[in-house]
Amino acid sequence: MNLDRIIAVRNRKTVYRDGDRCIKVFDENYSKADVLNEALNQARMEETDLFIPKILEVTTLDGKWVIVSEYIKGKTLVQLMQENPEKKQEYLEKMVDIQMNIHSKKSPLLNKLKDKMNRKISQAELDATTRYDLHTRLEGMPKHDKVCHGDFNPSNIIITEDGSACVLDWSHVTQGNASADVARTYLLFWLDGDMESAEEYLRIFCEKSGTPRQYVQKWMPIVAASQSVKGNEKEREFLLEWANVVEYE
Image (tube, rainbow, N blue to C red; front, side):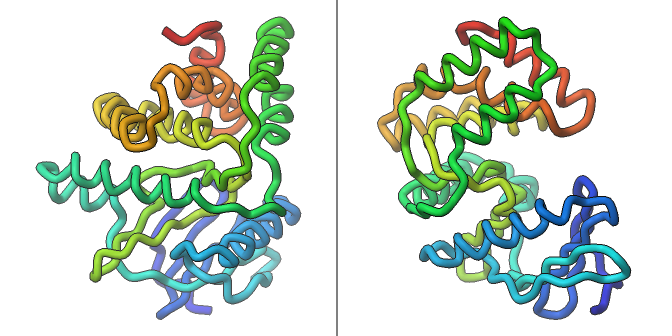
């Protein structure tokens, strides 16, 4: 394995390019179960007709777990947005189309979104009353079985030279309610400080899918609470503020 060319550095993992292969190296103390679960999630998504990088190998290198997958040549949607700001609306529309296509898929063996969220809310740094309220509201939300990416944002979308869209990073994929996935993407735009894109993205999604905006908004405190258990202190503080909103206005 050639680890000379770094293409991304993320939380406790580094991604390298080695020719036509993408090598994701996890930190030494990274959970073995989480690495294998990520590989399994991606393999499950390969069984759909979505355009995603195929897993080639799961191995170890110098005591670190490694996932080797196809390298997909192209530019991320966030790069294209930065290079062509006048086309941002067009890119947001494309992003929503890609996400709606993901939501149209089924993968019955994936973990259930509600189960994962209930576990995360239990770990959140919130008082017992707020956690109880969030658990109750989560249980009251409609149960669906749509594929939900879980970290759908412009940096995880590669646009190839022929205009095809390849979606990366399936480590958080579950099956559940698509509006929870949309609430997560909305909050990711906020975390990135891009409130304008967050609002426009939500408008486009609700318009294209026929989903009431208020329905997605009901998911936001629930999603924020479940996401607050990971990330840095600043992100956690921001998400906990959202989680404490009893009724989103």
